Length: 134
Image (cartoon, rainbow, N blue to C red; front, top):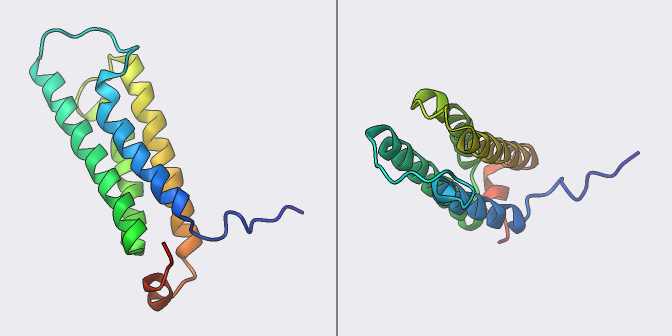
C-alpha cells in the first residue's frame, strides 16, 4: 500500500509552483511556438487581457496562500483554472489550437494544484490554517 504522507501536508513548494503557473499563464500568448500575429484585433486584445488577469490572479492567490493560508484561496484557484480552460470557447480564440491547448493544460494544472491544496487543508481548523508555517 502506498504512503500519501508526502501529499498529505500543504508544502511551500506548492505555493511557489502556483506562482510559476501564474507567470506562465501571463506570458502564454507570446510563447515562442505561437503563430505570429502582427495585427492586434479586438478578439486578440480581449484574449490577452483575459490571460493577463487570470495569470495575475493565480499568481496573487499563490502568494497569498504562502503568507496566509485559507480555504477560499484554493477554491478560487480551482475556479480560475476552470475559467482558463473555458476561455478559448468564451472569447472565440478556439481557432488557435496551440494557445487553446496551452490554456487547457495550464488551467488543468491550476485546478489539480488547487484541489490538492484543498484536500490537504480540508481537515484543518481555522486556527491550524492561521498557524501554518511558511
